[in-house]
Image (cartoon, rainbow, N blue to C red):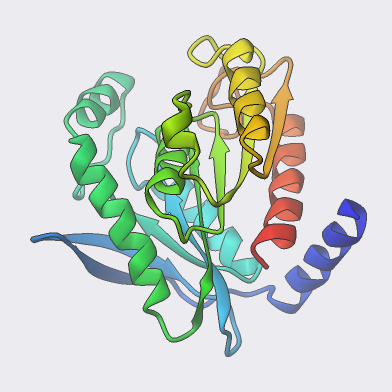
Length: 246
């Protein structure tokens, strides 16, 4: 089954090789305005869509590149900015900015982002999901917990939830991609997370790359980037999105 889904995804990619130019947009989050970048596939739609959530660095070029690639695959991709324009260039700066983001504000921004996508004329409101890396991976899971309409959530080495009361709220199909050498997210915690979701009857797919650490998909991570694992992780993501969101 997964083989044919992947073939279908590749065929769709061939049809939408060029995405439209990125467009700066803004949306309301409570009394505040959040800026983002919207990437739209060629064609009429309606398209499936994804909230694209950045790492602890902020909305930098790497995350925008990931959003552009998703648009190439046929998804409207909204690359959001949880940092209100700030972009970190050092780990210390990233840590400081990340700690300064109130959890309730982030949750509100994320819910407003998925609502914004559903309001777009070229988006199928029943096919909206989320994807994130590092900090953004954790927020992708948070959005799945807080948004009962979310269709899928892709968690790339993001923080996990372990409370059954929260996990019961998830209606989205969950894809988790983790590194076996990630000191911040032990393999045992990932396995427990998967087991809990399975017991609750949720749709979950987990992949652990044994030799990879945290942040292994970003080539800017000079010490930890793993090209082959990244390519395989992207294949898993393409197939998963094709099966549960397209």
